[in-house]
Length: 581
Image 1 (cartoon, rainbow, N blue to C red):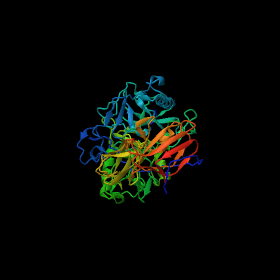
Image 2 (cartoon, rainbow, N blue to C red; image 1 turned 120 degrees about the vertical axis):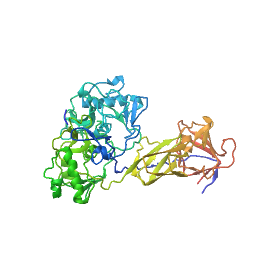
Image 3 (cartoon, helix red, strand yellow; image 1 turned 120 degrees about the horizontal axis):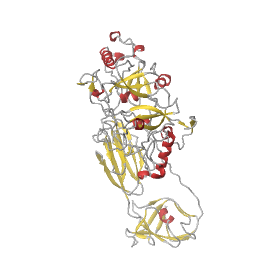
Image 4 (spheres, helix red, strand yellow; image 1 turned 90 degrees about the horizontal axis):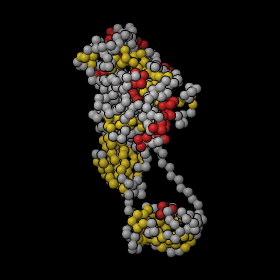
């Protein structure tokens, strides 16, 4: 293994007019600055692996930067699925290639067979879902708790079959190919949470995942957009492959990804600021005596303190990046993260070599000091006291943001839009995605019922009619309720209590000789629609439409108005108390 003018009529007539109406519902998606989560590290260590007080160390355990994990990291639904409340992703409780018996579950599979296995799970709607997928490398890695081993999962996790005696079987496939070496795919070793790569012909378990609810954070895309034929290893169409390059799961990246500030670079995805070149090439303060970029882990903290004392590049809050921050520089579409940064993103230099992070290796601190990142191929490892490269990072112009999730309830239907833009969803849209807004900002969501009533909002700070106002001081979830309205048209042959909201829907369901009854018109009940009579579900088609009924459809109290066109293509229609304007 390798690292989207009226008139009343009572008449009988036939017309032949054809028309069509198309309605387009736009959908927009834009990139947003994401928030990285904490690594989970809370302790600090000296060079000998002894736990020490964190104050002043600048280690990950002291700074603990990132979004905090939910108090309850995982929710076991009792149906074979578990939701990670940090990311919102839903995983199978059984980690080791689960599925229906028809899919030959359990055990290890080659990469191609693992993708086919997940497709089989979906064909049998496993655990009530047909949207399972092999996780991309960002998704499977998001499960890792760097403070725990065998498995590297948060304490109290509900998963089963994660850890086995066979070391190789503790590696789990991702759907992300190692670009440059398409015969390899990235994997995660759940023994210690290390990211590596494995030959696609080898056999590993697959841990299925699907979209769930909104989490405390939103994972970014990996960057991979290409798919590979498992046999020839050549680039191939992504359609139907289930590979990372097809699914593109995660938050979109900003374009441009980085802003060049001259001597520094700001990552517009994370808000982090990095030096535009390695320290030796970027005016290192002579007082810091940085003669070699390769330092022991302890020495990197000493040099970082000196850089801050000397106000390096105009800032005094540089630090060693933690494990998640350093990993945020990866683009899985490119063979080498370092090469991508320097050849297309504006960095003046970034060595394709190994770099320290501020995250200790708590799995065995007596043997291996800290976690390191390989900027040559995008893998990571644990390292001891040997010299590795380092790169400073600072918060930059990072704007904290929070996730807003919209949910729907009730039996009616409608749309919800946000101001500022970000949410544009219909109650029938099963893929309505949460949106990220700057922390502290105010978002107004407006509900528009569609032939339904509006039942109200929950989860808002204030409500004004159909408008919900939310202050984004934390991840928020609001619910819009749409209710079913009383019928406006009935067909007594079918039901006197259940009916239709539109004349067209009533006509479409009618049989020949049926009589339809419509409510008398008020300001709320005028029928605004273009109506076509074309035979319904039975031909010949001879219908009667009676208007002006009160709510029980027993007494005529007025007339019914149709604002629009009435077109008869086939059959006949007798009307009474109907006005068209």
